[in-house]
Length: 228
Image (cartoon, rainbow, N blue to C red; front, side):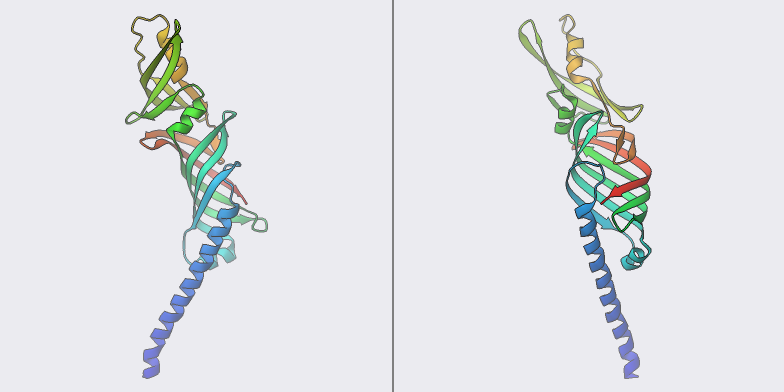
């Protein structure tokens, strides 16, 4: 009887040890993948990887994972031939398989969000002098022009929309002209802009949403490759 009472205790202890070993292996793998992973083909300041599902070791033996979340911060990439920095790129990868000799990965499908700060958007616009959140679907853009030797600065409320080919469009709803000839056109040259994103980390752009912390760009893709 004593032995029968001990068996459940032993089972619990062994189960705990196996669970601990499984999580240790998962943590080690997440660290290794994070150190080598490349999502956008450019320089990334930091990467965090979270391998979902249990047990990890069974998935590792099969070289297939149900779900992997990757959070990359400070992604330096290209948009329309111009450099742009993505503050944070969060990607949820599904049906992930190992390629080669564990030198890369491929996801059957992926969805994610790229968050671009307004400071980085200003740098990408190459025209505006400042930008901030302006409410749902809107941003406030500041631009300056020289009129008859005098610097004129205007802040306008602009709509943010997504055009063909994943092009982000920022256009002022209204520009006060104050009777100055051509002032509206001159201000628009500084505040209105388009930036074709094309693809982000091999995924197409499906939506844009201004948020207080920056512009959120929604992406989705299939058969997405992850180098490293």
